[in-house]
Amino acid sequence: MKASVGRPREFDPETFLSIALECFWQKGYRATSMSDLMKASGLASASIYKLYPDKHAIYLAALQQYMDESVSRGAERDVKLSPENALREMLEFVALLSSSSHGEKGCFTIAAASELLPGDEEVKIKVHYKFNSIINKLEKIIYTGQTQKIFRRDDSARTIAQTIFMMLEGMRVYGKIQPEIDDLKKCNEFIIRSVLLNRNVDAKELSRKASI
Image (tube, rainbow, N blue to C red; front, side, top):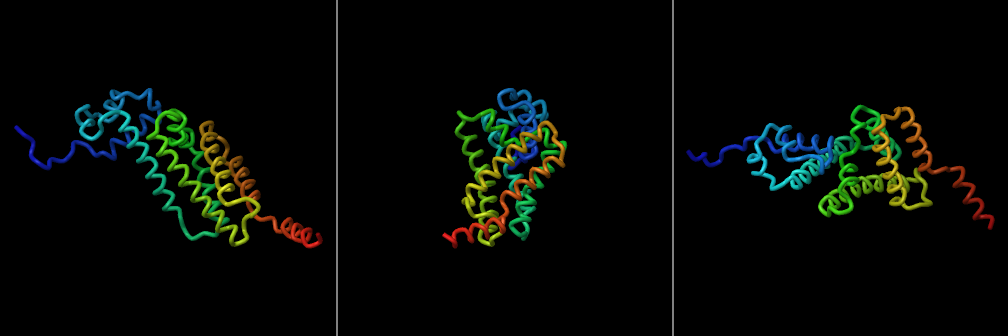
């Protein structure tokens, strides 16, 4: 007997991708088999192959879902803050995430880059987009702070943003050994002090140039 037209799918794709994401996150792409995904989801291969042609397609979809969710969480945190407070909020979020029980899992985007790059162009495109979106957000914060004479201006906003980004990604890796939150907060304060405009130094520099 033929199934009626418009019959609903046997499973929710987003739920399946969340399950697949956990499998890939725990074991890595190469060590995760289709059998693992079937067992974890309780689905037959026929159901999975209706939407995804192979394991790589599932991995890319799971990676995209992970990235979309992180962007959504970031948008929820975006409020009208001063540049300094916006930077502090971003640093604090990563510190809290890295020191929590979730921090031990690390960042799935970093895991994807570490395992599959170089070599997988599709993963590279997604990772590049994700990393660049974080840098762009930081650059916007820094540039606004520079125009308001809050942050130092001896380097470009892009260079400062890229430097902070690398520190944040390093914090996510550091989180895998469960660092103390107080240590991460001290590091964040160091970053803030390094970025803030030192008005005393700035005044001395202006005075020095004026005397030349």
